[in-house]
Image (tube, rainbow, N blue to C red; front, side, top):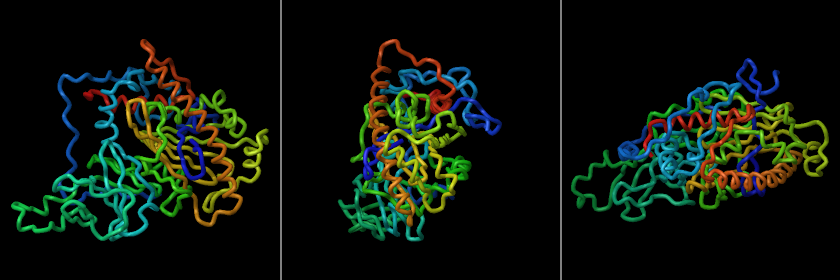
Length: 445
């Protein structure tokens, strides 16, 4: 995945993909950060998702033979999702309740909350949450709504402070969400402060990125993505610093692409389209060397850079000067890595920077793609120049993919159309389809 400009990441698809042959370690291809779990906060638990109407339509059940969730990339990738999963508003509504409200959603980086009392608002499953840095340096997350009359508490940006105060009537909450008090409290019968704390949400820092989950029983990312942290933890962490002005939680300023959110994720999950759609990437990357590792909650891709000099000046200069950030090994200089954390977190790990973004549906056929660039302090001039060249290359890739996902979305609306069989290079698309089917199996939109 790449973006249009050094300060505004907007695109959504990189050359990640599966090469199709599975080795003994569960990777497909040629043979050959510490997280903290979400914390219960004071106040009433988050209201459970609404009970759907009993006569609502039910998405079709998983197709027999679909790859088992958590299995390594299979030799047979399994079926793609039916077309209506990308076009049906009822399924989109079911995804809000059964996918987004029950999964870890990327909201920001730890650097966005630099000091105790720092806070920001973000969107999770059509709800606004407020994420704060607590006085002890930890994290807390709450629904962004006052328990009095429902006022939105935090807007972006807001200064740090020792408490969260409602701008309407002045009800005041500690950073942990507990209610401190209200003006003229004696005039409020039955003001039970212990029961009127902010609605809590689970929060976790993973690889230095902050995730929120509305499910109080969610499995921590530190557990479900332990293998990912081991593989790419040396790229990331809380000590990364942002490059430019764009931020993950700036949803209002994000590019909106003309496709269902799953079309954007599908595109990121496979490299089968790279030889046809991305000539620039084919000059840079060793297509036959792509690898894909699929686990239950994430997919990790790697692509080595080619040794042959590119015919394009920017790509050729990048090949020549590429230098890793501090903390990376020399071997990391010659490889690009990509990760998808189910369902919609996508992170590019380059030798010269990290790019994190998320795919947030704004309509059944529209997806916002907010994201941000990060690097390490003390990078050399070579690394900084390589980063700018990399982003320039990504500007082109992004435009190519933006047009393609819009074309796919249009085609999916064709009456009678259903997707054909997947290539082995699309094994991760099959994994993603199986996860979505499992989440919606028996759900009532």
